[in-house]
Image (cartoon, rainbow, N blue to C red; front, top):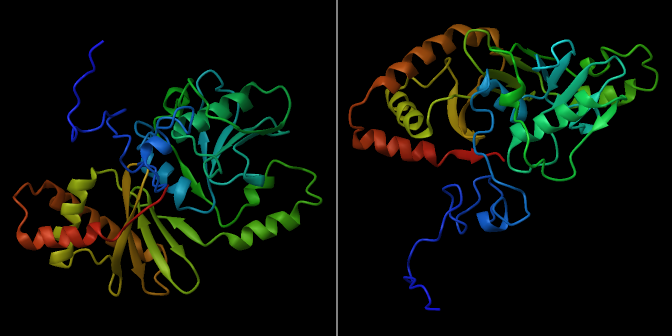
Length: 309
């Protein structure tokens, strides 16, 4: 049989649009063929796993940025079962069926098989179908099955940010022996608040610094150009003394980050956030060719991105 001709410098075949030799988009630092593209490995990587779900940007924030928060879910076919999505569950469990009959699923978990939505859906279904209370987890990729987009019946999600993790025992009557672990978890939770005036913007305090971290749904290229225009005009300063320091790239979206003056608090950001959103929308609507200054500012912003897996 004649061998197929192959040009030496021909581009490698792609899987799902990703070259096997390219860096894996999960941010691991490995080549795709050695990470999520490996045969029998982590599985196909979904860069934007929450796309199509209500409050996509909030779900990204709860997965990566927010210490303690919950979201009530209505699951198709299980409308009578109280279901709750949480940032971090007790013992970092992927999911659990509670003695109270509630079913919880966690977003901040140790495993990462490439599609967060399918992984959460898999453990959620297992917990819903479990006959007894207990923890449900994953030891291998979930394979074929529903994603959260297939299960969630809600058209809008109400995010509830908590000061700590007291919600872990809200449905427990006998709390003896639980206080120690709860106090330890509460001590590690940074004060955080979700702004009410805009979507998916979260204030947080580290004690010595305050930050605003805002997950945005716009395509990266358009958002970077718009932010560059605002940076040049000085309109990227949320409040006096604040400084736009860069952004996270995670789950297919960008999350710009600002350093804030100590003592700012979340309430003082509400009106300025609305004004910034209006300025950003105007910049996004500007379809004129970016000037050399805008391009330079955009390149500078691109260099201040940190990818979160």
